[in-house]
Picture 1: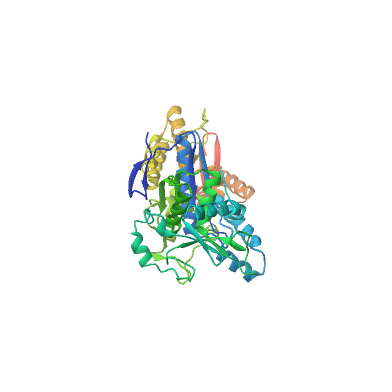
Picture 2: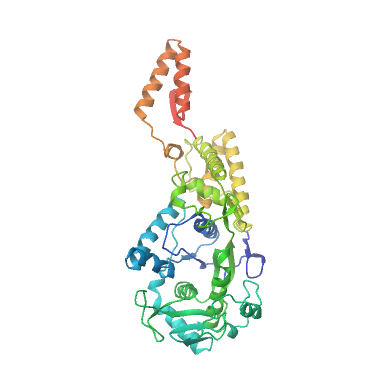
Length: 457
């Protein structure tokens, strides 16, 4: 079986071949922790969580790193506004990010490096770049000289001369070229900083990821992923500084980027007032429904987020849990593995829409399975495939009960009253009780062994 992924660097789909099949290395750009995560932040976390799950299904050893950016001008502004150290802001929102992503079924990475824990590594890389003639110090700053790297623009497919000539970056007097980017910058009295050979200051954003990748994964990694908005300048600058710091060694073999999230057909932005927070969505729907909605579009394509789409996702997850609940009495002999059809779908550039369609087909098969062997296979396929996609991770009864206040004693008494009415052939009363329970999402099931009830979707 081969895994095919779209490599942003080449602009085409390629067969994934890790440098070391026993140690597949993956790095995903994580959050800048100064505010609550919105649905756009959640998309790469969920999409690349599926990628890592798939890689772990295929390969015996996967090392997955997702960073925390905990020093940034936005963090500084939030800390200044509240009158607290930056750590008070970053600790708070890191915890909230973990809670939100956990609610969406996102597994924690193997390594979660924080920028502030890697200042020494960043300074060491900056020193190497200066020594090799790729960076220069000026007025307390250190800047990368983009003209020193001939392949600058290779990821974003931009011509270097055009980048330099058309740069919109403010031209500071200490810059040799307008497009030269900051590796280190001085800090004023109210800004966080660290001592360095150039100034009391802090690192540039791009330097963080390069240094943390080198520290935890090595000079060359297999996969680097992130949002489409990071292609330029962030990932372009990462390539330039990392390749130059390592004497031309390849930095990343496969680059993967997810598309933007729009809200009800409009761009998500503060000015439009439509920034949609994960924590608010979790008040509207279960995490698995939100996750399903995020996976309903291919990761590389734009995703239109809508209330109708979320409601549809919830109904689709309900159907999968209904199928799983029909197999409640089936005992599996071993750990379930994903169905080949779902693995095949995901192996074609993480095609989650197709994989979800295959899940629906598995549910239909489960609904009609009759003999013990086919029921076992149906349950194993559903559960194994669900684990690969990060859904069907609950007991079906718990799924349908969440968010509902159900008085079990009251329901039991109503069921007894219905049985008593049936016993005296008062079918009108029995039907009335049944209908009342149905309105409350309770389904009655009359079986030879007695009457039972369950919560429905």
